[in-house]
Length: 144
Image (cartoon, rainbow, N blue to C red; front, side, top):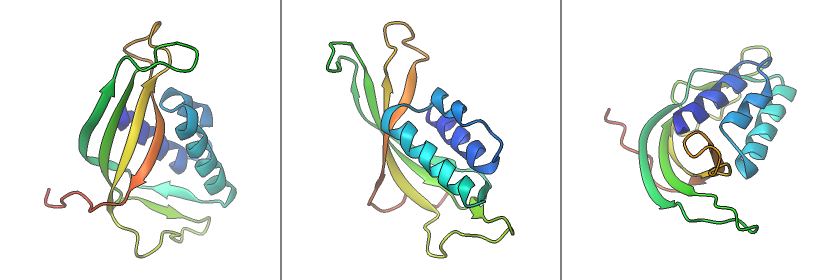
């Protein structure tokens, strides 16, 4: 799921004609809104991405299959920490000049909550990233 999530983000940022609705297949809730705004802002600036994000490490942090929302519906969640490598990723303006800060780290950790709001109808395929946050910790090992 998270590999697909990053692939969709990369595609949307690389191709200004890609339909934002494909984000609905991998994100929901706060993560969906946040990524939509990011892509719309970058497109409005005339920016696009080159290169691809790579997952280096993935660490499960918690699973709650009995989680319920306010209405009593079961919404299972899984929390995962992911170390991503963006060393091959650049964001360029309409002239092809990089807009990425020189001091941007190439690797970093993000924590994702993946939820299934359609658990009863689609327990295997209903999973979507619902929240994401950047973690302030040492990047994963770059020895690979």
